[in-house]
Amino acid sequence: MSPPEVAAPAARERLVLERIAARRARPALFRDARIGLAHGAGGKASRDLVEGLFLPAFDSEALRQLDDAGRVHVDGLRLALSTDTFVVRPLQFPGGSIGTLAVHGTLNDLAVTGARPLALTASFVLEEGLEAAVLETEVSTMAAAARAAGVELVAGDTKVVERGRADGMYVCTTGLGRVDRRAHTSPRRLEPGDRILLTGPLGRHGIAVLLARGEFELDAEVASDTRPLWPAVDALLEAAGGRLHAARDATRGGLGSVLNELATASGVGIVVRERDLPADPVVAGACEILGIDPLYVANEGQLAAFVAPDRADAALAALRAIPGFSEAADVGEVVAGPPGLVQMDTAFGGRRVVDLLVGDPLPRIC
Ligand code: MG
Image (cartoon, rainbow, N blue to C red):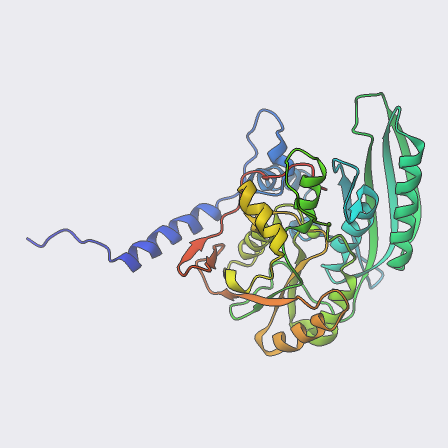
Protein backbone atom coordinates (compact mmCIF):
# COMPACT_ATOMS: atom_id res chain seq x y z
CA MET A 1 0.00 0.00 0.00
CA SER A 2 1.45 3.37 -0.99
CA PRO A 3 1.67 6.23 1.58
CA PRO A 4 -0.91 9.07 1.27
CA GLU A 5 0.17 11.76 -1.18
CA VAL A 6 1.51 14.92 0.44
CA ALA A 7 1.48 17.99 -1.80
CA ALA A 8 4.87 19.64 -2.21
CA PRO A 9 4.99 23.27 -0.88
CA ALA A 10 4.83 24.78 -4.38
CA ALA A 11 1.88 22.57 -5.32
CA ARG A 12 0.14 23.38 -2.03
CA GLU A 13 0.57 27.11 -2.64
CA ARG A 14 -0.85 26.69 -6.13
CA LEU A 15 -3.87 24.85 -4.67
CA VAL A 16 -4.55 27.65 -2.15
CA LEU A 17 -4.24 30.33 -4.85
CA GLU A 18 -6.59 28.43 -7.15
CA ARG A 19 -9.16 28.12 -4.36
CA ILE A 20 -8.99 31.88 -3.72
CA ALA A 21 -9.38 32.50 -7.48
CA ALA A 22 -12.41 30.18 -7.66
CA ARG A 23 -14.05 31.95 -4.70
CA ARG A 24 -13.43 35.32 -6.40
CA ALA A 25 -15.09 34.15 -9.58
CA ARG A 26 -18.44 33.57 -7.81
CA PRO A 27 -21.15 36.07 -8.74
CA ALA A 28 -21.66 38.95 -6.27
CA LEU A 29 -24.74 38.75 -4.02
CA PHE A 30 -26.31 41.56 -2.01
CA ARG A 31 -27.83 40.02 1.11
CA ASP A 32 -27.24 42.58 3.88
CA ALA A 33 -30.25 43.77 5.90
CA ARG A 34 -28.91 47.32 6.24
CA ILE A 35 -26.44 49.61 4.53
CA GLY A 36 -23.11 50.06 6.31
CA LEU A 37 -20.15 52.35 5.67
CA ALA A 38 -18.39 49.44 3.95
CA HIS A 39 -20.98 49.55 1.12
CA GLY A 40 -19.50 52.89 0.05
CA ALA A 41 -15.86 51.99 0.52
CA GLY A 42 -14.97 50.48 -2.85
CA GLY A 43 -14.10 47.00 -1.52
CA LYS A 44 -15.94 43.68 -1.39
CA ALA A 45 -19.11 45.12 0.20
CA SER A 46 -19.31 47.83 -2.50
CA ARG A 47 -18.84 45.18 -5.18
CA ASP A 48 -21.69 43.11 -3.74
CA LEU A 49 -23.96 46.17 -3.69
CA VAL A 50 -23.12 47.30 -7.23
CA GLU A 51 -23.01 43.89 -8.90
CA GLY A 52 -25.65 42.24 -6.72
CA LEU A 53 -28.30 45.01 -6.67
CA PHE A 54 -27.67 47.95 -9.05
CA LEU A 55 -26.33 46.04 -12.03
CA PRO A 56 -29.17 43.47 -12.30
CA ALA A 57 -31.78 46.23 -11.81
CA PHE A 58 -30.38 48.85 -14.20
CA ASP A 59 -28.81 46.34 -16.56
CA SER A 60 -27.26 48.00 -19.62
CA GLU A 61 -24.35 47.19 -21.90
CA ALA A 62 -22.46 50.27 -20.66
CA LEU A 63 -22.94 49.40 -16.97
CA ARG A 64 -21.89 45.81 -17.55
CA GLN A 65 -18.42 47.07 -18.54
CA LEU A 66 -17.92 48.20 -14.90
CA ASP A 67 -15.75 51.03 -16.18
CA ASP A 68 -15.31 54.44 -14.52
CA ALA A 69 -17.55 56.10 -17.11
CA GLY A 70 -20.34 54.72 -19.29
CA ARG A 71 -19.97 54.84 -23.07
CA VAL A 72 -22.87 56.31 -25.04
CA HIS A 73 -22.85 56.22 -28.84
CA VAL A 74 -24.84 58.98 -30.56
CA ASP A 75 -24.92 59.11 -34.37
CA GLY A 76 -21.43 57.68 -34.62
CA LEU A 77 -20.09 59.94 -31.87
CA ARG A 78 -18.44 58.07 -28.98
CA LEU A 79 -19.36 59.87 -25.76
CA ALA A 80 -18.68 59.00 -22.11
CA LEU A 81 -20.75 59.94 -19.07
CA SER A 82 -19.75 59.73 -15.41
CA THR A 83 -21.20 60.88 -12.09
CA ASP A 84 -19.85 61.05 -8.55
CA THR A 85 -20.99 62.40 -5.18
CA PHE A 86 -18.55 63.95 -2.71
CA VAL A 87 -19.08 63.73 1.04
CA VAL A 88 -15.54 64.36 2.32
CA ARG A 89 -15.10 65.40 5.95
CA PRO A 90 -13.64 67.98 6.67
CA LEU A 91 -14.64 70.12 3.67
CA GLN A 92 -11.16 71.61 3.38
CA PHE A 93 -7.78 69.96 3.87
CA PRO A 94 -4.16 70.61 2.80
CA GLY A 95 -3.88 70.46 -0.99
CA GLY A 96 -7.59 70.59 -1.75
CA SER A 97 -11.23 70.70 -0.70
CA ILE A 98 -14.61 69.19 -1.54
CA GLY A 99 -14.78 71.58 -4.52
CA THR A 100 -11.50 70.47 -6.12
CA LEU A 101 -12.41 66.81 -5.57
CA ALA A 102 -15.85 67.30 -7.12
CA VAL A 103 -14.30 68.64 -10.33
CA HIS A 104 -11.17 66.47 -10.58
CA GLY A 105 -12.89 63.25 -9.44
CA THR A 106 -15.52 63.25 -12.16
CA LEU A 107 -13.20 64.54 -14.89
CA ASN A 108 -10.67 61.86 -13.98
CA ASP A 109 -13.25 59.10 -14.26
CA LEU A 110 -13.86 60.31 -17.83
CA ALA A 111 -10.14 60.62 -18.56
CA VAL A 112 -9.25 57.08 -17.49
CA THR A 113 -11.86 55.70 -19.89
CA GLY A 114 -10.05 57.54 -22.68
CA ALA A 115 -12.55 60.41 -22.84
CA ARG A 116 -11.48 64.04 -23.15
CA PRO A 117 -13.71 65.94 -20.68
CA LEU A 118 -16.15 68.42 -22.30
CA ALA A 119 -18.75 69.59 -19.77
CA LEU A 120 -19.81 69.28 -16.14
CA THR A 121 -22.94 69.66 -14.04
CA ALA A 122 -22.97 70.23 -10.27
CA SER A 123 -25.63 69.54 -7.64
CA PHE A 124 -25.29 70.92 -4.12
CA VAL A 125 -26.92 69.56 -0.98
CA LEU A 126 -26.41 72.34 1.58
CA GLU A 127 -27.05 72.20 5.31
CA GLU A 128 -29.08 74.95 6.95
CA GLY A 129 -26.59 77.18 8.79
CA LEU A 130 -23.63 76.62 6.43
CA GLU A 131 -21.51 79.76 6.36
CA ALA A 132 -21.91 81.57 3.04
CA ALA A 133 -18.16 82.23 2.95
CA VAL A 134 -17.49 78.47 2.90
CA LEU A 135 -19.87 77.98 -0.03
CA GLU A 136 -18.41 80.97 -1.88
CA THR A 137 -14.90 79.57 -1.48
CA GLU A 138 -15.91 76.15 -2.80
CA VAL A 139 -17.82 77.60 -5.74
CA SER A 140 -14.86 79.72 -6.84
CA THR A 141 -12.52 76.74 -6.30
CA MET A 142 -14.72 74.60 -8.55
CA ALA A 143 -14.94 77.32 -11.20
CA ALA A 144 -11.14 77.68 -11.25
CA ALA A 145 -10.57 73.90 -11.40
CA ALA A 146 -13.06 73.50 -14.27
CA ARG A 147 -11.52 76.42 -16.17
CA ALA A 148 -8.01 75.00 -15.69
CA ALA A 149 -9.21 71.67 -17.10
CA GLY A 150 -10.80 73.43 -20.10
CA VAL A 151 -14.32 72.33 -19.13
CA GLU A 152 -17.53 74.34 -18.85
CA LEU A 153 -20.07 73.89 -16.09
CA VAL A 154 -23.38 73.81 -17.95
CA ALA A 155 -26.11 72.94 -15.42
CA GLY A 156 -26.66 72.67 -11.69
CA ASP A 157 -29.09 72.19 -8.82
CA THR A 158 -29.35 73.25 -5.18
CA LYS A 159 -31.15 71.63 -2.26
CA VAL A 160 -31.04 72.67 1.38
CA VAL A 161 -31.66 70.24 4.25
CA GLU A 162 -32.29 70.97 7.94
CA ARG A 163 -29.49 71.65 10.39
CA GLY A 164 -27.77 68.42 11.43
CA ARG A 165 -28.86 66.48 8.31
CA ALA A 166 -25.65 66.99 6.29
CA ASP A 167 -22.07 67.87 7.21
CA GLY A 168 -22.14 71.39 5.76
CA MET A 169 -22.39 70.37 2.14
CA TYR A 170 -22.34 67.45 -0.27
CA VAL A 171 -21.60 67.92 -3.96
CA CYS A 172 -22.56 65.71 -6.87
CA THR A 173 -20.97 66.27 -10.28
CA THR A 174 -21.69 64.66 -13.64
CA GLY A 175 -19.26 64.87 -16.52
CA LEU A 176 -19.61 64.44 -20.27
CA GLY A 177 -16.62 63.57 -22.42
CA ARG A 178 -15.77 62.53 -25.94
CA VAL A 179 -13.89 59.25 -26.27
CA ASP A 180 -10.57 59.99 -27.93
CA ARG A 181 -9.99 58.49 -31.38
CA ARG A 182 -6.77 56.85 -30.14
CA ALA A 183 -8.46 55.20 -27.14
CA HIS A 184 -9.47 51.53 -27.10
CA THR A 185 -9.27 50.87 -23.38
CA SER A 186 -11.43 48.52 -21.32
CA PRO A 187 -11.15 46.90 -17.89
CA ARG A 188 -11.37 43.62 -19.82
CA ARG A 189 -8.39 44.26 -22.10
CA LEU A 190 -5.54 43.35 -19.72
CA GLU A 191 -3.23 40.76 -21.30
CA PRO A 192 -0.43 38.66 -19.84
CA GLY A 193 2.81 40.58 -20.39
CA ASP A 194 1.21 44.04 -20.01
CA ARG A 195 3.33 46.32 -17.85
CA ILE A 196 1.73 48.34 -15.07
CA LEU A 197 2.66 52.02 -14.87
CA LEU A 198 1.81 54.12 -11.81
CA THR A 199 1.88 57.93 -12.02
CA GLY A 200 3.25 58.69 -8.54
CA PRO A 201 3.40 57.97 -4.80
CA LEU A 202 0.42 56.38 -3.08
CA GLY A 203 -1.70 57.57 -0.18
CA ARG A 204 -1.25 61.35 -0.09
CA HIS A 205 -4.95 62.18 -0.39
CA GLY A 206 -6.28 59.74 2.21
CA ILE A 207 -3.60 60.58 4.75
CA ALA A 208 -3.98 64.36 4.18
CA VAL A 209 -7.72 64.13 4.92
CA LEU A 210 -7.20 61.83 7.89
CA LEU A 211 -4.65 64.19 9.46
CA ALA A 212 -6.88 67.22 8.75
CA ARG A 213 -9.53 65.66 11.01
CA GLY A 214 -7.12 66.23 13.88
CA GLU A 215 -7.97 62.92 15.53
CA PHE A 216 -4.34 61.86 15.58
CA GLU A 217 -1.52 63.73 17.27
CA LEU A 218 0.76 63.33 14.27
CA ASP A 219 3.06 66.14 13.35
CA ALA A 220 3.24 65.43 9.62
CA GLU A 221 2.75 67.72 6.61
CA VAL A 222 0.89 65.87 3.89
CA ALA A 223 -1.03 67.54 1.05
CA SER A 224 -3.68 65.82 -1.07
CA ASP A 225 -2.56 64.89 -4.60
CA THR A 226 -5.88 65.97 -6.19
CA ARG A 227 -5.25 67.00 -9.81
CA PRO A 228 -6.61 66.42 -13.32
CA LEU A 229 -5.39 63.23 -14.99
CA TRP A 230 -6.35 63.96 -18.60
CA PRO A 231 -2.80 65.23 -19.40
CA ALA A 232 -1.44 61.82 -18.28
CA VAL A 233 -3.99 59.88 -20.34
CA ASP A 234 -3.36 62.13 -23.35
CA ALA A 235 0.40 61.41 -23.11
CA LEU A 236 -0.22 57.66 -22.72
CA LEU A 237 -2.50 57.61 -25.77
CA GLU A 238 0.03 59.58 -27.80
CA ALA A 239 2.83 57.15 -26.86
CA ALA A 240 0.92 53.85 -26.90
CA GLY A 241 -2.36 54.41 -28.80
CA GLY A 242 -4.42 51.22 -28.79
CA ARG A 243 -1.58 49.45 -26.93
CA LEU A 244 -2.81 51.26 -23.80
CA HIS A 245 -5.12 48.43 -22.73
CA ALA A 246 -6.67 49.99 -19.62
CA ALA A 247 -6.28 52.82 -17.12
CA ARG A 248 -7.94 53.52 -13.80
CA ASP A 249 -7.52 56.23 -11.18
CA ALA A 250 -6.60 54.72 -7.82
CA THR A 251 -9.17 56.59 -5.72
CA ARG A 252 -11.30 55.05 -2.95
CA GLY A 253 -9.92 51.63 -2.04
CA GLY A 254 -6.49 52.61 -3.41
CA LEU A 255 -4.26 50.78 -5.86
CA GLY A 256 -4.95 47.44 -4.15
CA SER A 257 -8.66 47.63 -5.02
CA VAL A 258 -8.06 48.86 -8.58
CA LEU A 259 -5.69 45.98 -9.36
CA ASN A 260 -8.20 43.47 -7.98
CA GLU A 261 -11.07 44.93 -10.02
CA LEU A 262 -9.14 44.83 -13.27
CA ALA A 263 -7.59 41.39 -12.69
CA THR A 264 -11.10 40.02 -12.11
CA ALA A 265 -12.62 41.86 -15.10
CA SER A 266 -9.91 40.57 -17.46
CA GLY A 267 -9.54 37.08 -15.96
CA VAL A 268 -5.78 37.49 -15.49
CA GLY A 269 -3.32 37.60 -12.61
CA ILE A 270 -1.23 40.59 -11.51
CA VAL A 271 2.13 40.78 -9.78
CA VAL A 272 3.32 44.12 -8.35
CA ARG A 273 6.79 44.83 -7.01
CA GLU A 274 6.73 46.66 -3.69
CA ARG A 275 10.27 48.02 -4.10
CA ASP A 276 9.29 49.78 -7.34
CA LEU A 277 6.22 51.56 -5.92
CA PRO A 278 7.00 55.28 -5.69
CA ALA A 279 6.67 56.30 -2.03
CA ASP A 280 6.26 59.54 -0.12
CA PRO A 281 8.36 59.02 3.03
CA VAL A 282 6.02 61.16 5.19
CA VAL A 283 2.96 59.20 4.03
CA ALA A 284 4.82 55.92 4.49
CA GLY A 285 5.76 56.93 8.06
CA ALA A 286 2.20 58.01 8.90
CA CYS A 287 0.80 54.76 7.49
CA GLU A 288 3.23 52.73 9.56
CA ILE A 289 2.35 54.56 12.79
CA LEU A 290 -1.40 54.29 12.11
CA GLY A 291 -1.19 50.67 10.96
CA ILE A 292 -2.66 51.43 7.52
CA ASP A 293 -1.52 49.78 4.28
CA PRO A 294 -0.82 52.55 1.71
CA LEU A 295 -1.94 50.14 -1.03
CA TYR A 296 -5.54 50.72 0.11
CA VAL A 297 -5.35 54.45 0.83
CA ALA A 298 -7.21 56.77 -1.58
CA ASN A 299 -5.41 58.91 -4.14
CA GLU A 300 -7.07 61.70 -6.16
CA GLY A 301 -4.35 62.32 -8.71
CA GLN A 302 -2.80 58.95 -9.54
CA LEU A 303 -3.67 56.34 -12.12
CA ALA A 304 -2.49 52.87 -13.00
CA ALA A 305 -2.02 52.21 -16.73
CA PHE A 306 -1.77 48.78 -18.36
CA VAL A 307 0.39 48.98 -21.47
CA ALA A 308 1.45 46.27 -23.93
CA PRO A 309 5.16 45.50 -23.41
CA ASP A 310 6.28 46.88 -26.80
CA ARG A 311 5.02 50.39 -25.93
CA ALA A 312 5.57 50.40 -22.16
CA ASP A 313 8.97 52.15 -22.13
CA ALA A 314 7.76 54.86 -24.51
CA ALA A 315 4.59 55.32 -22.42
CA LEU A 316 6.58 55.64 -19.19
CA ALA A 317 8.94 58.18 -20.76
CA ALA A 318 5.95 60.19 -22.01
CA LEU A 319 4.38 60.19 -18.54
CA ARG A 320 7.58 61.29 -16.83
CA ALA A 321 7.93 64.19 -19.27
CA ILE A 322 4.69 65.82 -18.01
CA PRO A 323 5.19 68.42 -15.25
CA GLY A 324 4.28 66.82 -11.91
CA PHE A 325 4.58 63.24 -13.19
CA SER A 326 8.35 62.72 -12.94
CA GLU A 327 7.87 60.04 -10.25
CA ALA A 328 5.89 57.73 -12.57
CA ALA A 329 7.18 54.17 -12.41
CA ASP A 330 6.85 50.69 -13.87
CA VAL A 331 5.54 48.76 -10.87
CA GLY A 332 4.44 45.35 -12.07
CA GLU A 333 3.15 43.02 -14.70
CA VAL A 334 0.02 41.22 -15.83
CA VAL A 335 0.40 37.42 -15.73
CA ALA A 336 -1.76 34.57 -17.01
CA GLY A 337 -3.06 33.54 -13.60
CA PRO A 338 -4.44 32.48 -11.31
CA PRO A 339 -7.26 34.62 -12.78
CA GLY A 340 -8.40 37.50 -10.56
CA LEU A 341 -5.49 37.14 -8.16
CA VAL A 342 -3.19 40.06 -7.28
CA GLN A 343 0.15 39.30 -5.65
CA MET A 344 3.00 41.47 -4.47
CA ASP A 345 6.69 40.72 -4.40
CA THR A 346 7.50 42.31 -1.05
CA ALA A 347 10.50 44.49 -0.32
CA PHE A 348 11.72 41.80 2.10
CA GLY A 349 11.54 39.01 -0.49
CA GLY A 350 8.65 36.58 -0.80
CA ARG A 351 5.26 37.05 -2.33
CA ARG A 352 1.90 37.85 -0.70
CA VAL A 353 -1.70 38.07 -1.86
CA VAL A 354 -3.13 41.60 -2.20
CA ASP A 355 -6.77 40.92 -1.39
CA LEU A 356 -9.85 43.05 -1.97
CA LEU A 357 -10.83 44.58 1.38
CA VAL A 358 -14.40 44.34 2.70
CA GLY A 359 -14.52 47.99 3.75
CA ASP A 360 -12.19 50.97 3.86
CA PRO A 361 -9.71 51.82 6.62
CA LEU A 362 -10.59 55.51 6.07
CA PRO A 363 -14.26 56.34 5.42
CA ARG A 364 -15.54 59.67 4.01
CA ILE A 365 -12.32 60.69 2.26
CA CYS A 366 -13.94 61.77 -1.03
MG1 MG B 1 -12.32 56.07 -10.87
